Length: 429
Image 1 (cartoon, rainbow, N blue to C red):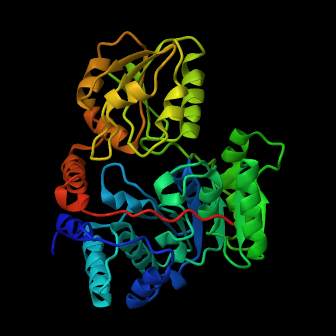
Image 2: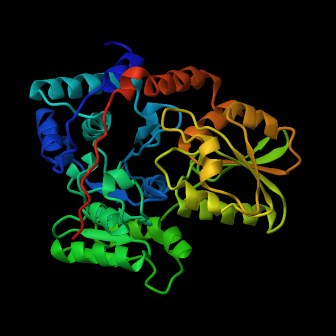
C-alpha cells in the first residue's frame, strides 16, 4: 500500500458485522491502539438532520477568522474522500492519508474486529488532527449520534441543527427515537446549543441535558422563527465558546465571508443560464431550496428542477414541496446502488400540479436542460446527484476529475457493496 488510491481501497475493504453495536467500546479500543488521539483534542461536535455540514463549515470559518488552528471533519464527500479531512482550510495530503490508513488498519487487525469504513475514517481523522495540534476541531456526526464513531470524543460543545424523522431503519423511524439518538452527544456536565426544534424533539434534548447535568441553550429563544434560529446557530456556538474562555476574545480584522459550500445552495452560470445546485435530501432541505428559488425568481417564473434521490430518503415529502404549476420536474436516477428509480418515484408520489418528466440518465437530463426554456435550472436531491452535475458542468478542476471518477467507482464497486449496515434498535427515553 503505497499510493492514495491503494490506501482508500484498503479503507473500503468489505466488513461484515452481525449487528450494529449499541456501544462506543469498539471505537474506544481502536483509538487506544493508536494512542487515544481524541484526548488531545478540544472538539465541537455537530449533529442534526439538515445543515450539519454547512454549520460545521461556518463554525470552522468563525474560528479561523480568529486566527485559530482548526480541524474540520465532515461527511459525506462530494468528489474526493480527502474532502472529509481538513486542517486550516487544506485537505489532508495524500502521503498523510496513506500513513494514517496504515496506522488505523494495523490497529484494527491487531484487535481482530471488523470496523466499518466510517469508523476507520474517523479514527484516521482524530489521529491526523492530533498530529497537527489544532486549537479546536469541528466534527460532524455521521449517523444519529449516541453510538456514532465521532461520539467517542468528549466534546466541549454539542451543536444541534434541526432534527427530523430520518433513517427509519437505522434510528427507529419515529421522530422521538431519532431525537434520542442525536441527544446522545450531550456529555456529562457539558454544554449544548440547539436551533428551535419541534416540541417533542426539544423535550428529549432537554431531558438528556438534565440527565447529564449539562447546559442546553436554545438559539434565539422560543419566539424566533425556525429559519432565523438556524441562521444564528454558528454564531451561537462561537459565542458559547467565547463566553467560556475556550477561544480567545479577538476582534475580527475583516467581515467574515462564509460563502457557500460546493453542492449546497450553490449558484453558478452555465452557458449563460443560472443553475442552482443543492444536495440536500430532507423535506426541510427542500423547503430551504424552495425559499432560495423564490428569492431568485419570484413566485411565478417557471423553473426546471432535476431531481435524483436515494431510496432511503423521505421522497414523498421532499417531492411534495415542488408540486406547483411553475415547476417542470425532471425525475432522474442518482448515481450509485442506493438510487431511487425515477419510474417508482413517479408512480408512488403522484403530482397534482407540476409538469413531470422521467429522464433515467442523469447526464442526459443535464444536457437536455441546456435547450430548456426556463431561465433557472435546479439540480437537487442528493450529494451524489450534484457531484456528477458539478463535474459535468466543468466546476471541478481537470486535475481532480480522475480522482473523483476513481473514488466514485470504488464506492459503487462490488466489494464495497458487500458491506452490511444493520439497523440500530429504536430506543427512546
